[in-house]
Length: 101
Length: 162
Ligand SMILES: Nc1ncnc2c1ncn2[C@@H]1O[C@H](COP(=O)(O)OP(=O)(O)O)[C@@H](O)[C@H]1O
Ligand SMILES: [Mg+2]
Image (cartoon, protein in one colour):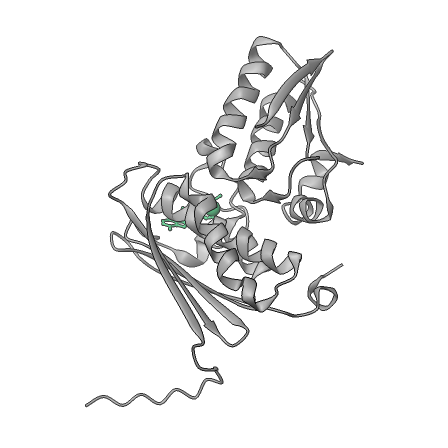
């Protein structure tokens, strides 16, 4: 299961082992509830446990980016392995997401 | 009488598998695991397994959310056909959903008709990138068939782009 934590102005999302459309619906709607109710400005996606991601993961990131970027918020990706980094790059997300170790 | 002369250089079929499943999103992971299990006798690399799983996941998700309009109705059926010709996998995902009016446009990276559902429009781009070949046949109100090919057992270093 994914989990959510708010630290200061950051929503930290620990992503599940596999990210597909089935999982993404729930992750996005939970994240949006945090963004609305806790007024967090930035979102950190933690890929530490993630071994599989399809284009639904790109949709999760882009969708949250659209929600927070107009208020100056930023999106970060941490602990992404080589394959997930490649998938982020193929989708042009390096311009939107700060990819960190 | 019909005679077919096929001059393509294709090996004979060495294994095949076909499954039908309901167009519900739980089956996205089932379908990609089944395809991955089917090719394990070929000793695929981790990279090749991920490539096949990603491509199957994209095609099956499309059948469920676009073809069958995300109805999650157990009576809507997605079919997956897997064939091995030696070390080449052919996998076909078929739905009898709404179909695609302009396939060429649909296959453009970032093109999506469902931005409201948080779709990124990268599905076909990933299928193309992770498989060797991709064929899409679609008719409006009839359905869509996506057929993908991949040779299994190539050194991961030759396959990677970086
Ligand atoms: N099986 C299908 N049935 C009907 N339409 C489809 C199907 N697969 C893809 N499409 C159409 O092609 C578009 C692009 O697909 P894709 O590249 O996977 O992006 P996304 O799924 O993120 O929209 C979809 O938005 C949809 O309009
Ligand atoms: Mg798609």
